[in-house]
Picture 1: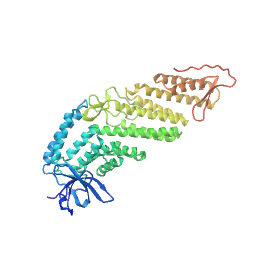
Picture 2: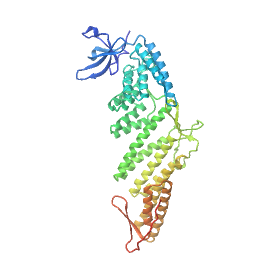
Picture 3: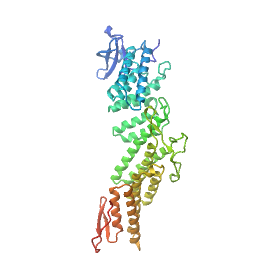
Picture 4: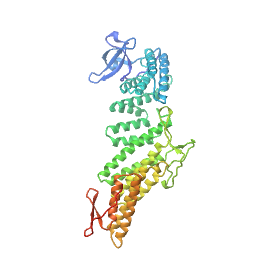
Length: 490
């Protein structure tokens, strides 16, 4: 029988057979590759006894190893493993998240039985890895997921005669599971290696792209992570190992948006603090584009399951969304975990992004652009019945609206001319009342300070002197009577 389809280079966790050794008694023995020692150019192999229990470890050249042939009782192993996996599946789908120790013991017994028939059985190690993850044993999960990968059929094609279907597809899933476990153990190098193996076969694997992006971000390589998150968000779900579950795909896309929102938002905030407002606006514009495109996607339906138009259909000011429209996402086991929360977060993020842009434009003295950004922020918040009643964001946008009005008053003051003082005072009083409304919606120190500042600017006997690093000092104008009493917000 030609077994070339079955043979692959040794890797950690693989069951191998020793051959062509000078110690004849070792030839034909089975063992697990546990580590490669580059300095010696040998694999550390943990030999297995007849009962599949480990014995001594020896160093063996790769040329004296080959993947162990399929077990004679592989079918019996799969039968026992499938019973254990069925119990595991029921445990995971239990709404309470609780399971008995008797169930755990039964699963272990079935896996032990399967392992006696076939130590390298992929289903056994995948199942043991899943169980370890459920119980928070990340180190154990890595051991078994690694064995599942090493004893699978690798990423070198498929053989339809193999139990479990096309090995290429299944092996991708195993490597993704192993990468996830390695990442949970903070083994970023190991996680990256497994994900790169997946992408070598399917460069468009969106889950792997998301995970690579997260891996890079943990390493502090945000510039490299951004393209990965963009690919996870935008690439078509195609090729080997594609996500068959559209709901799971939506969750991957959403996770990519969250990462991008965090990255661009953080960058913009840092640039704004450094008074690099133009650069901050560029970051916010990129983020706003991503959020708008996401809200224009076909990922929403209504309570009747009927397809609806995307939330953004051109001009945001003329977009409406009724009370019945929801974004539906599901968790493990098909349990619905959100209807409107995910959608409303996107809408709120868009409103906040445009609001931040408003603040940067005002710092640059570009009131017209600030008004446009604020109008987009207000329109975004009104997209959904839930978000348009969000008092915290309403207060935030009112605050920015007050700043726009105050800046308009500053422009009139700086321009001077006949009647400028009166016109400016009227604008400052408008700003003061907007700040009052903002503070009433969502009490905030910034709104209180702005209320006092606008009040001072509107007062005929007082003036506000800006400070070099922001803020400023209120004082009585020279020659004017003292004892001015100003209103204080609660």
